[in-house]
Image (cartoon, rainbow, N blue to C red; front, top):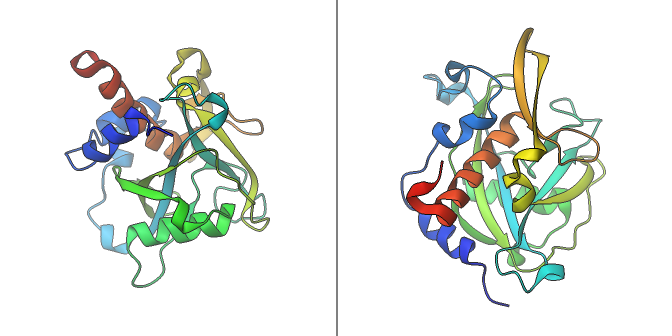
Length: 221
């Protein structure tokens, strides 16, 4: 199967300076100062997630029909339970960001390491609630992956197409109470059991920014 053109573009683009917060901010529910990189970064817990893109074989005739793999975190977990996220978790001592993202993904959704091609790293993001610095690894899986959820960590595994994420009709915004204050929270209506918002939405927003750069070049907004 021919590799989607966006995957080739993304692999090269990740070697260059990235949009960072400028790409993430469209889905940011908080003021910029909350998401700026903290000065005491060494005190934050390090986590890594995998933004895994795949080409659905049901749409094999469309070279760039790409989907992102997402999970709904187990309701039994202490932090961010029931929320949509990329597979990933805390880094073990001595692990690289890529090693953490791959290990956690294989443990959570049952994929085989050899079927995942690492494309590079997206911009990192820190989450004040859990004092976590999250590093984002981009990967590609040829064809639709066969997954098996780890019941202790994942309630649901699903995917969303880039086309749906690019569709403005799937974005909403509401007033929520977050961190003890009312804020306007943008989110995607793409999950069955929860909205796609917060840190994961911000990470995806950077991917969408890069896709628009790929598709529209200098005309990308």
